[in-house]
Image 1 (cartoon, helix red, strand yellow):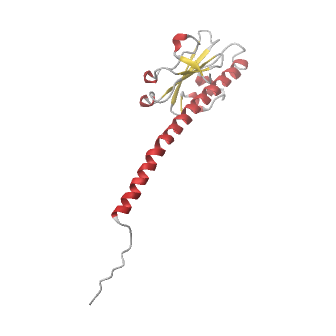
Image 2 (image 1 turned 180 degrees about the vertical axis):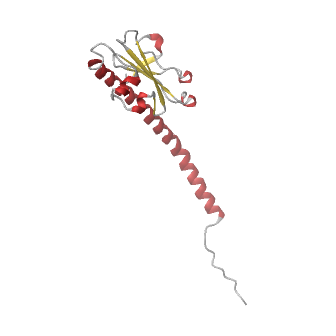
Image 3 (image 1 turned 135 degrees about the vertical axis):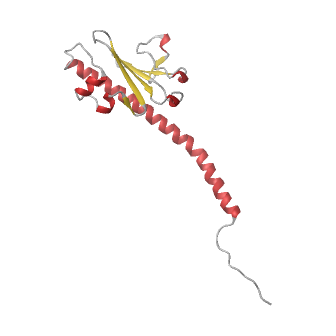
Length: 161
């Protein structure tokens, strides 16, 4: 009598499916954490850019501004007080908009998400002459940046409080 013995090598279909399911579960757990870390990094970069702009405004005022005037973002870039990318008004997924008071004795810079689909996820920020960063803690769906002044209608809270 002949015995038909075959040496089977490899994995069965069930074993492969179990591995795929385990990988899927790990991905389902890890991906939201990675997205949250990316969002946090993007927001931190925007806050850092606002602090850089505030420092550049103070430097500009004490030097080229004659002690009284602030400058728009483009002028800060021309004076090499901020990098060229930030001087264009767009950096790291945020659009920075600078506005000056009529004689240039006060400024307000807002940072809003560049991509409209990210406006519901990322927060908007603002900084003004007082150097206080305000954050939009209200309805993110509007994508509105907080006002540069502290009042109840601004929809913005001081960052870190």
